[in-house]
Image (cartoon, rainbow, N blue to C red; front, side, top):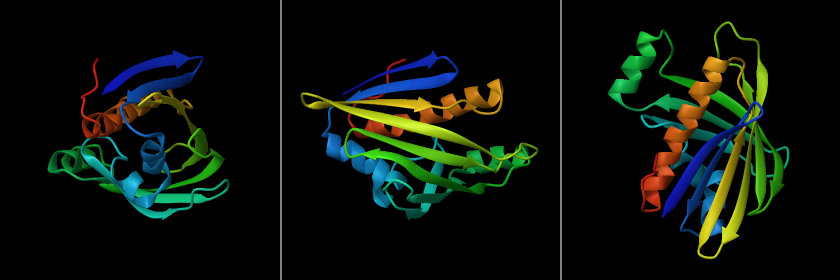
Length: 168
């Protein structure tokens, strides 16, 4: 079972989900190569992880890959490659409670490199886990909206996995 909500708190985006799952299982989706690859990326994309070292200062490197003919065509139409390398590091880790990943945003043409943080809080609620994801804004309102849409899209993979499509 899943419930969800998205909210803006200041300039940050907050996305909440509650799943009927063990906190260890949700935690592993963020902190292991197999777990991360199983759901990361909006619908139509996948992540190919090259390094995932889940400790403070540990690196996370992956390629975000357009994985369907429709997404490959869409990327081509926008003049973008079908995949791009992504670099990040774990900047906070309290096992099964909280983590933060700082992403290096260096793949946007014409935009100076900047960092963006994804913070995730996990709370046990009986046989459920509440996951609260807080995203830093991007460099523009348009890209911040696209980030929120993309992240919400990738969470539908978890919604399906845990037996309930996200409600809107």
